[in-house]
Image (cartoon, rainbow, N blue to C red; front, side):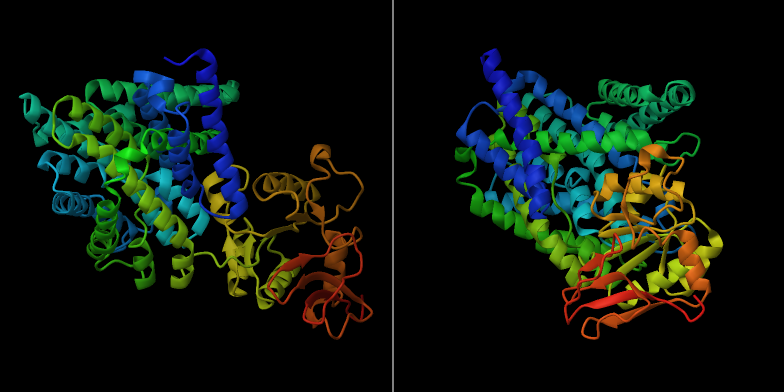
Length: 594
């Protein structure tokens, strides 16, 4: 048994490794999950301090269940019916998701089971369990990759819904396979298909009841004590997990996901605060769980399985997934490029690791032959698919034209005439431009100008904000309200950083929102306020592009510089623009009557 100091050292090391991997991955611009698994495995091989059985004993699996439930709840909060184009559309994204989590799951289950038998020649019961647990993908791996790749909305919605729904359904399928094999080994009562259907009903029922209870609690708390909303949510999600699991084993995951989906699609209660906190918790949980579970796999347990597992991964990646997507997208509205990318995204996640760890141990104790190979094979499949998709998802997405370009992406907040002129000039210079405005008339004018109009509530709709801010390299806040500009700059710098958010200079030295007065860099020049910019524009000033070779003429105020490499520099402080011969300057050219 570990001493108190050893346990403290182990916990500290796990937290440092989990967060350190995520920070390093952000700096290296790679998905964090690519680092978490090998680092956890290496830590487990080098030291026993991070081994979960030593740190937590028998409480580890229940703790994993609570963590996975919170992850699924947070993922469910991001699943809005409105983002899926399915009303009256034949072959829309929702039908693809339904096929992926029904026909696709069945095909993956059967194909993986048979492939495992042929490649490893294991006991059929072990192959049955491996086939069941390896259907699971999940938000722990899909969401980080989507955040990294930034695919098109249709692809994002399809993979997000599939990943969130397949986790709890796969867990239930794993329980069914595990129960059948365990009872066969111990002479217990055989598992019936009706038991799986009952688990689904119980899970959804408990989830909906817990949602209603939480909804009643949040209505009162948000009126009187909104700071307690997060604690109430954690309480109800945990209660739903435990209650559903007590009624039907491992149905708590689906109950938690049901709660998230139900709350995401109601409009009476604002869930932004809860979603924001849950996102932070989930990032930490993903890091901790991947470090701990990968640390539980020993080098000796995988040494003889590596080559055979690579063959299994090849079958799953090259044969099963493309076949699933081919069937699921038959007759759908997804383009061929979108289908190809969905067919290249199927990493395995934390639920497969957690169930593999628990089922492997229990079946080994029950005397099932080859059961000790369940966790090592599951770990290698998870590691292989995570590394494969983690390193190739972005280049494949860009090759297929469904991912972000990685170039300059500018968010322009404001849709009035000269904001549209600036947006058009930036687009012509090669930047990707999104114009955010809540005015329907301005949105229509923005679209007529050939620009992308975004209608996201920066203050209350966190998921829509994340979509609007995907890949944004600069944010320009140029509305007529100085107070709004300062507040929006304060909000956006939380997501984008202090060096990429710019706002117009206020008309006076002081504004009402004193606390946010200094938020965001001041655009162009302190004298170019909204009123002054509007006066010059109405007097005949125009937004024009000039080559750096020609230099700037009198009466031209540089606003932006686009370099030959496609980097956009925003002019601030009113200083002179330093232009290279290959640079292009976007300027405000004074009209004759200005």
